[in-house]
Structures are given as C-alpha cells and as structure tokens.
Amino acid sequence: MPNYPIHTIASTPEGSKSALEQLQQAFGGIPNIAGAIANSPKLIMSLVGVFQQVHSSSLSEQEIQIVLLTDAVANSCTYAVAFHTALALQQGVSSEETGAIRERGVPKDKRFAALSTLAKTLIEKRGHASGEELDAFIAAGFTKEQVLELIAIVAASTITNYAGTIAKPPLEEPFQQHVWQG
Image (cartoon, rainbow, N blue to C red; front, side):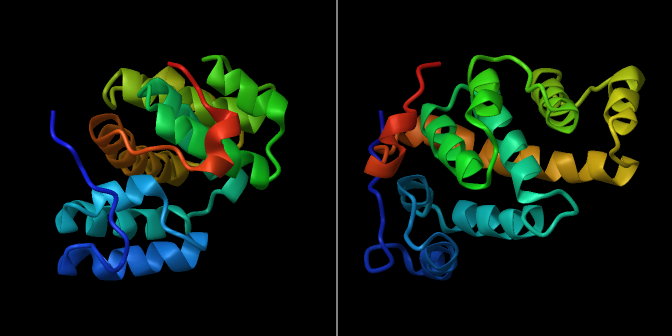
C-alpha cells in the first residue's frame, strides 16, 4: 500500500503550493487530508476550485456541512466524518442532528433531512435519483438549481472521501473527539 506524506507549504510539490496557501488561509492551518491530497497537484487544485464554488453556493454553511457529513458517512471516510462533525458543530448544527447522520439516520430538521437524504441517494444510486426523490427535495423548500449545487458538493466531498480512504491521513487532535468507526 502506498504511503502518502502529509505536505506542508514548504514540502509540497510546486504545483500544489498555491492550493495549500489558500486552504491555510481558509482554515487557519492545513488539514492533514489536504496535505495528503497535495501529493497530486492536479487533485488538490481541483479540490480547491470546486470547494470555492461549493462555499459560495446559495446553501448556508450549516446546510453545506450537513451534505459533507452525510457524504463522509455514506462513503465511510472516517477522517472526513470526524472533520465535518467538528465543522458542522462549529456552524451551529446540533449534536442531535450530527449524531443522527453519524448513525446513518436522518436529521429531524426538515431542510437538513431533505439535504441529507438526497445527498445519500446521489451517492448510493450513483446520481440516479428518481423524480419522486427530486420532488421531495424541492418540496422541502429547495430549488431545481439547488439540486445541481448539491451535485457539486457531492463531487467535492467524493474527492476528499476517496483520497482520505486511500491516503489514511492521521486525524488532528481537535477532531479526535469526533472519531467515527464506519
């Protein structure tokens, strides 16, 4: 099994440097998963580009974190589950809502439930959501354009989830309290 070093700005390949600088500015540090992904300049640059779009979508940061956490659970990425649990809680999502997702359930909040359900459906059905599933999402107060935004979030999280599962970066201390066993 390959070993992927966790890069810093000083150690990263030249093509990954600007991406890590952007992530350091956004997070106040470079998450280990990004340091591992930086082994591929193409992948880290793709990730940063899509995440810039994700975090400028019409969805709130709470809603984005619901999708990212749901995707991490659906993809069984232990690093991303711990990471997005922490970020969701920081954004004001309740521990009851994050706990439901971590247990592969559905949040109680109607909008969170619709986001989580459709995100999980897109992953499990490889994008083949039925008309009824899409209608249920829209009936929860979302738009048809937000269906497409949700696809961007799923795409972004798939990059980190797959890379995290392959590279197995160590979980930073602040996220240890949210360790998850898939």
